[in-house]
Length: 337
Image (cartoon, rainbow, N blue to C red; front, top):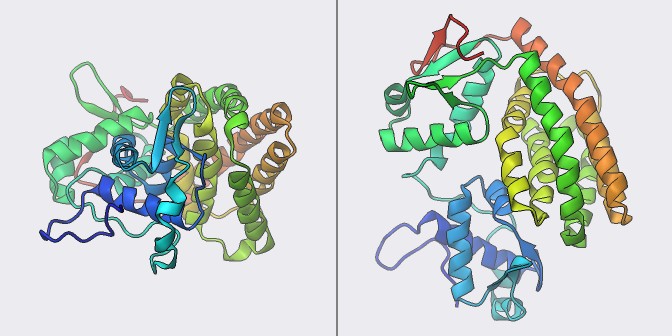
């Protein structure tokens, strides 16, 4: 039994978790996910650009249908009976990658834009975010605006002061360095936890993608760099069995969002960005069954990335300018730096 493909006889637009559940069914039918493969909330949430709560609800729907299993030690996996049950869907015209998702009533619809706008301006100073102005600017309720701000706080972009005001700290070289130091301490450890659980097919897919990008770097869009970064630093690490470690890493995702904006707004000093070759070396080392060596390469990669990010931010501050936003008010007293 399939959940549906986006239509409903009552005329109701399918909820976001229903759309994701339907797309996961299609991927299972096409062999993208196979019997016994482990699915993680963090990895799927990153893939679709939605919250973990939304993915959790999609998983529950598929568990009820017997498509997914949940166990204490392995988490959520594709059930042994799932693939044959959906074999008939393999000729579906839907694309293998996720289709456009209908989501007009939740925070996900504006989150990406707000996060990038905020990160871009944080390089120039500290700001206060006015919740009512944010809601008005995007034509959403204050509840939706508040949820967006709470998510940005969770990934380390915003914080609240003692009076409950939303503050956007300045993205200084010192703060960036401290964030990277935490990442090169935590991410190699997370990789060691993830390595035993990584599907071989995932590593092979990542190698294929990186080989393709390295063969024609001149045609790669900034969004592809962003996706490849998240594939290693979010999706791959999400296969670890230490959930506290994975959740802790989410507090340093401000750097991933910053990198995504920098790729889009600043030129690279390299014909081929070094991170792609570094990612490929990590993936190949994991394929060779050497997780400790891969963890060492990941630490080296993060240490080297620090200088590249600082250089891009310096270039952006010196050469770029941005229009003022009604929901951002500058802080001149340094309270959020």
